[in-house]
Length: 281
Image: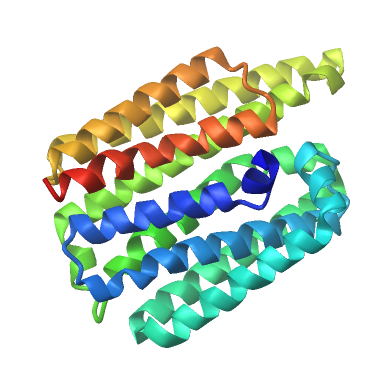
C-alpha cells in the first residue's frame, strides 16, 4: 500500500493540494478559487506519472520506482490519464485567460525538461549528471507555478506584483530547489559503488557544488523571511523546514527512493499543516 501511495505520486498530490490551499488562505483569495488546490493535485498526478511512463520507454537506468511501475503499468497509466482528465476539466471550467497563459508557459518549461532528460538518458549517466542543476531549477519553477502563481493569478496579475506575494513565491521557489538538490545527493550516493577510482574526484566536486547550492538557497530563504509580512506560522514552519533540510544534507545517508520520498517531500507538508489551522484560530 505504501508503494502505491508513493510510486503513483498520491503523496505528492496531497502535498501539492495543501500547499495551494495555504497560498489561497494567506492571500485571502475568494473561496471559489479552491478548485485550484484540486488542480494542483490532479496536475501532479498527471505530470509525475507521465514522467514515469516516459522513463519506462526510454533507456533510463532501472530504479526501484521504474521497476515497480513496469510491473504495475496499467495502474500508472490509469492514474496518469485520470490526472490529465481532472486537470483539463478544472482548466476549462475555472481558469481565466491569464491563468491559461501562465499554465501554457509552465507546460512549455516542463516539456523542455522532459526532452532534455530524455536526450541525456540516451547519452548515459554522465550526461544526465550535467543536467542536475537545470533539473532542480525547472522542477522548482514548475512547483512554484502550480502551487503559488496560478492561484494568485485570478482575473489579473495585480496580486502577483505585491511585495509580500513576490517574497512568498520566492521563498517557495528556493525551498523547492533546495529539496531537489537533496535528491541529487541521493542519486550521487547511489552511484558510489559504480564509480571508478578516477571518477571519485568528480563525485567529491559534485557533493561540494550541491552543498554550496543548498546553503545559498537556505540563505536566500532566511533573508526573505525577515522582510515578508505574513502570519508568523508561515515563518515558523519555514524555519522548521530549513532545519530539517540542513540536518538531512549533513547526514547524507538516506539513499532509498521510499525513504527520501516520505521524508524529503514530506517536509513540504509542514508549512500547510501548521499554517492552515492558525488561519481559523
